[in-house]
Image 1 (tube, rainbow, N blue to C red):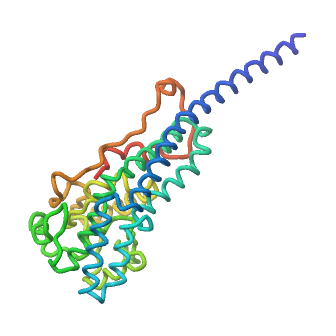
Image 2 (tube, rainbow, N blue to C red):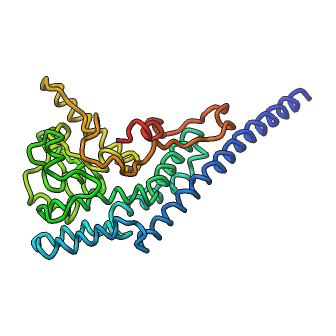
Image 3 (tube, rainbow, N blue to C red):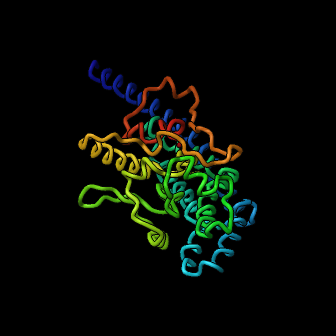
Length: 319
């Protein structure tokens, strides 16, 4: 009789324990669904705005591209690649769409992995939602627009930014490379390491034509002498995926370590904002996913995701 009683007690404890875990998972799932819905709606609405020409700078980008192609015929393929950002087939929009797809896949298992894993996915979804704001996306287009303006050799003015010459003077740069606004932006290329340990910027596809404008761009010199760009100075927090942030941090850590071994001082490229942007430009605000108090008293379940990978970067890594 005592044995049966003990077994019954164990079953009751097991049922209560299992019920509690299921309840938390259900609550986390319900909370996460709000972020999923918002992100899906925001990205879909952005695509609709782009396709209908309701994002102002899509029209300016197309106009700049059409104008410069007539005079700089040797760069037609490069300019066509830059002009893709005036459509929903460009790397900036596709980058958001791809991040949404990845987040939706992670959202299926996140609640089962606990509060921390769910908050990480929610944070990414919140950033995607804010990045899909047409006003912020409109500003992201100023980088490719201003690159085309520089290719035009002064025939077309930069928008929402100082001229190339004024920006270089303000930031103490002798002569910034054409296309420098896109360096560091993972939509257009990435940092790669040579056998000697140096890191250089490798352009994707047709963007590799930027190499014709000047010498290779090394992280060690770029970090100290980069010019202004909307992405690097304002949009980075919202237009970079968790995996891209991981790669950026790894590159910076490698270069910093190399500097220290050589007895040199290393300055992060994001240590301060560069001069050159318009003070009236729309800028993304720090974004942080907020879960209801129902979860705050619950003990977090284990998760394979590093908590610093996302939730800590929304505000202080915004630029």
